[in-house]
Amino acid sequence: MQAKDKGELFQQTFSFWGKLNENEKQIMIDNSFNKIYKSGENIFNGDVNCIGVLIVRSGQIRTFMLSEEGREVTLFRLMQGELCILSASCVLKNITFNVNIDVVEDSEIIVIRSKEFSRLMEENIYIENFFSKVIADRFSKTMWVMEQVLFMKFDKRLALFLINESEELNSNIISITHEQIAKYTSSAREVVSRMLKYFEKENIIKMSRGKIKIVDKKKLAEYAD
Amino acid sequence: MQAKDKGELFQQTFSFWGKLNENEKQIMIDNSFNKIYKSGENIFNGDVNCIGVLIVRSGQIRTFMLSEEGREVTLFRLMQGELCILSASCVLKNITFNVNIDVVEDSEIIVIRSKEFSRLMEENIYIENFFSKVIADRFSKTMWVMEQVLFMKFDKRLALFLINESEELNSNIISITHEQIAKYTSSAREVVSRMLKYFEKENIIKMSRGKIKIVDKKKLAEYAD
Image 1 (cartoon, each protein chain N blue to C red):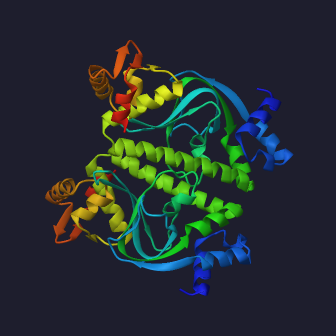
Image 2: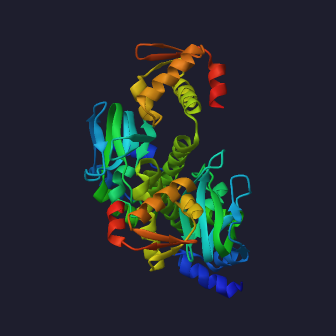
Image 3: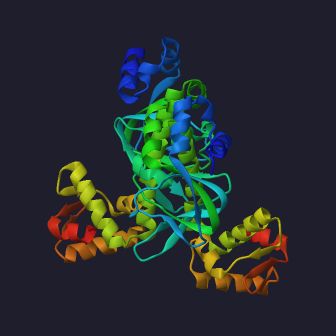
């Protein structure tokens, strides 16, 4: 990726860009690079050196918690234009937990190296402030997930998930496996399959290989409510 | 509380105090007040107008999530000198969730009104930045709890809780009811009682009315590890 293109991307992505001097801008450009990740690849986990700030240029990545026994709770997914700061947690004094990040769809990611990013952030309050707000936003997203996982019944959670996916895709047909739904809703595959079968029996959805079609959106919405 | 005392408290509590002009300092002093809360009282919940930023002058308060069915998950407790910003969530654009806050021990709380606080924060990036870091810290605390609740076995959680309490009190005797432990560890009272009984049978603790004595700290630490 050319320096000029990086500059344009940073200007679009970072509201503090206009507050940087030419030297600071150059440091960010010089210390960033693009990387192609394949679907399923792990980008970041607690054991790996913290990679830096990520900007998703294309594709989709996922942040999740992982238990010692391998249970996963998806916190949020990030799409084109969104950025990830928890992947630079080593340079964030107030962030003392680790998440995992893996790739949902083949992705092009712009990485800004932790060390240089951290130095800039210490010197420029606008950068620090921008990323602090990103963290607050991720906190909100995480709390929403936690409320669901801890308190909400699974029929409601699954209905909400299907509605959100359908709206995001702008289609009644969702291409997704039960395994994937289990991951995104922090449930088990068997539980997902059971509940989907129930929805099908109730004529709310229709399943085919790797696809779910919503046939009664109104009834699904009643479950979600 | 006198204006002069407030000024001193704010100087101790807020690292940005030196970055405020006299007018801004005066606004904070004029728009804050102290309030006495009794143990068990609710300070804040989603339905109540958001009260503002809180500083705990004495006592102890608790932030928790509450399900529709009344299940509670304690996120963190705040003691003397600590401050709470989630009680001003209505003026924080990136905080879209609500927590509950109640009083653990009789407390004196300094409240800074949301509206005026919000205006100052918009105008002064040092204030915004300070509180953003507080939010990041609370995010970390919350994630720690979530890991425990979602992934950790209860014997380990209870052992960790007893050790932390004992260290905080600097005593082997903890005055606490099973009900309270259930709240703080986000569990059910029956589960707490059962596990405490097991610890007693193993000669790790000794129970008496409203008190738990740790008799074998080493063995307890093994459970916590």
